[in-house]
Length: 227
Image 1 (cartoon, rainbow, N blue to C red):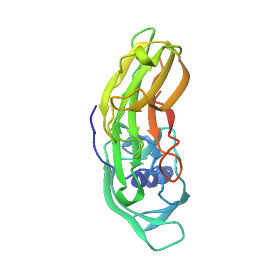
Image 2: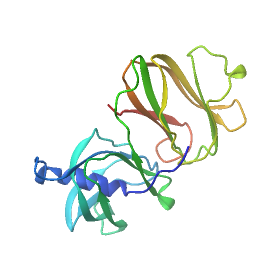
Image 3: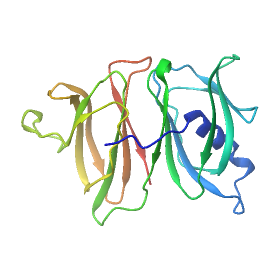
């Protein structure tokens, strides 16, 4: 698992909002999905090149893929309804690429991540799954991907010693029913239990572990459809 890179989530959201001005075949495009995963961050207003383009964006807001203009833009993010700027960045998106951008960590240490997505279909009869540790209060974890009824006490972790903000590669597995359990590293103490997940052949999915609203337990997860 590795951290892939950076891009301001709010820059991504702003570019998404601005895409209506440049969504034609003659303009170079990137495909972008965004997730707000900073659990205690306030709702925010977003300015693109000095103009407000979004207001009151909340925690866990996310989008499907949207075409955005490739290129460089200045983005400022303010706490909603204030002049207090919490992010001031210049960001660039490359034409022809697919991304998931998310803001992670508690607001005092908010960190934007950019994930490079691979949305091509898996092999026949397979699914492709990627996991993101975006729960800042959970610490280092082990991840178990098992059959729904598997006994955790005798199970071997699929991924071990995963730090906060780590992102796995895509795991290609047979279609079927699965259960994902996330534990404190080196223990069988479950922090997140997905229950039964039914994955159909051809699907590509990204699972994101998250804190509760405001930070801390109970932890949860969201599943994003990559294709």
